Length: 428
View 1 (spheres, rainbow, N blue to C red):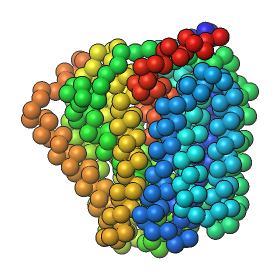
View 2: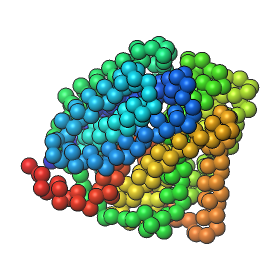
View 3: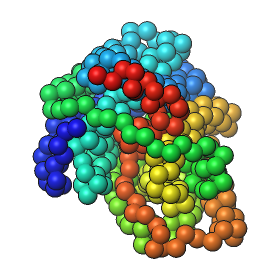
View 4: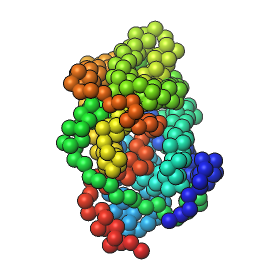
């Protein structure tokens, strides 16, 4: 086992190259999602077809999180990382070469699978550099890098037309370049750890609100990033303003993530989750008249929406953990990520069909409806169960919309009881 830096500054100094590489990777990830959604709309794809194409990324991501550890055990972390980076770099170029729904679905599935592997390897290395005392700060720094990368990636849309090759080539270059600092800095490969398994039924019994809220968060988050650019294009925004529209949601998240997390640590977390969920529904509704008022008003409204909606991911995990024993938390995180992943697969397709039937404004009405129903369920739970005492609440760690390495690692353990046996079989 590698020696871990004892202080946060030392851990950060030993991890800066990993964070740099991951930030570059997020630039490519942020650009490609918006680019493909806009290009699909420009090519005449219906909202339903666009949602179908975009949702396959999350299906691939879930499959990749389940299968990557088995591949990693056999061939090693470095080979897996290099292979997945090469495949995902090539996949984005195929979109520009062949404009076809089946081909794009296949490439999005491949991209999702590969990005799950890239996250697992990179974030596991980062997690391996931390101790219990430095892990929270280091993962919070990773969250900041993630959001900055995804937000800045939206702005790269201004460099060329989505109808031309340069943006696809730029995305491929970013993914390829991201490999360099990660591979050159990574030391000894990290290991996976065992935990007590927990079923979805048992988890629902322990924390029904946590499970339902996580499904809603996955549903809404994936839908916004998949169909938000389509919505922005259909209301007449320019490519430049579409990039600002998507960036505004990320900027709002960076601003409000910390304060919302602090509130959930200081007060009854269920109450905070309920109010934030209801405010998210109201902010989604506010985006509709804001769009009709002015572009700047829309940017402020969507920034408020993103700032409220995306931090719910961290609160859901923290709230659920409040109802668990310590040895259940890793497996429970895995179950939550899987539930959120199912929501992410379902959301873009479901909301795309609604957009085709009822028009583009139905996107934010539907999002508001999901959060409104979640808020109503949360209120009902408040009348049926006493809150967790503040003294028993764990601390909330800011977590990016994409699952952290430790959470993805727990998905792998949750999904396979044979993991330990295979690990022993292929251990060096």
